[in-house]
Structures are given as C-alpha cells and as structure tokens.
Image 1: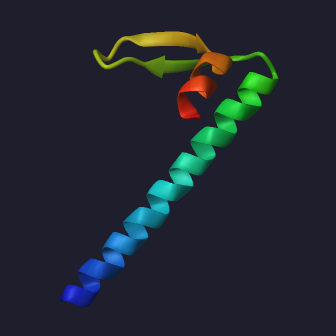
Image 2 (image 1 turned 120 degrees about the horizontal axis):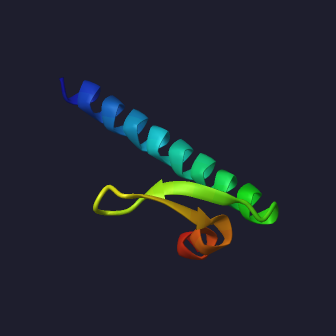
Length: 59
C-alpha cells in the first residue's frame, strides 16, 4: 500500500511540474507578443492583465 502512495505522490509532482512549465511558457510567449492574459484574482473576479506583468511575478 505504501508503494502505491509513493507512486501517486511522484506522479502528482510530475503533473505539477508540467503545469508550471506550461504556464511559464504561455506567459513568456504572450509577453513576447505584447498580449494580455485573462486571470482570476483571489476574490474570483476576472481580470485582463498584460502578460509582461505576470512574467515579473513568475521570476
């Protein structure tokens, strides 16, 4: 049973790494093209933000 948990944890970490990598690539590409991205703030409000502003937060 413990082996299954370790396997699941490792798989989960790989998925999270992939999501972070894809998000970074999206923001970098959008910033290079002077585009905006639509995000939601901590209160759930939808906002349009320049990708360059988001790029600063990732670094």
